Image (tube, rainbow, N blue to C red; front, side, top):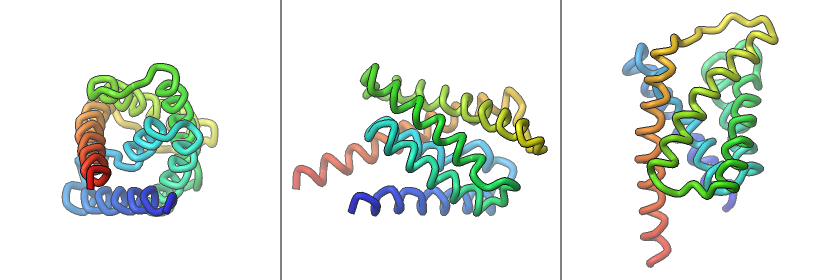
Length: 161
């Protein structure tokens, strides 16, 4: 049961990203549901669970979307999950604004880490411009906070029953 929800979340992220890539290929890069899942689990369940989910989500993203080196996104997500999980534990981030800031900053940091990791392996990647990276951070923050609140409401309704 502990694996069912993360596996379902990764599957939903894959379907969302794949659907966006088919319908809006030019704009699909502005939403990263795999990163949102990683951040959610790091915020709610700690850095260890966040890192494991981030690695799994990163591997799925690497395999599904044709990465040259498998595991590069997974490594980036593990680093992000560790930082977010430690930060959430120390600061108790629970409100929508706090989570939006965390998602925004984690998105920027994820892009920076991925670019540096790709540079270490001498890979050519499509680097987003600074403006596109900011837009990606804002979109992830908006969608992420909305999804997190929806998940919390569904969990509260389930507990009441």
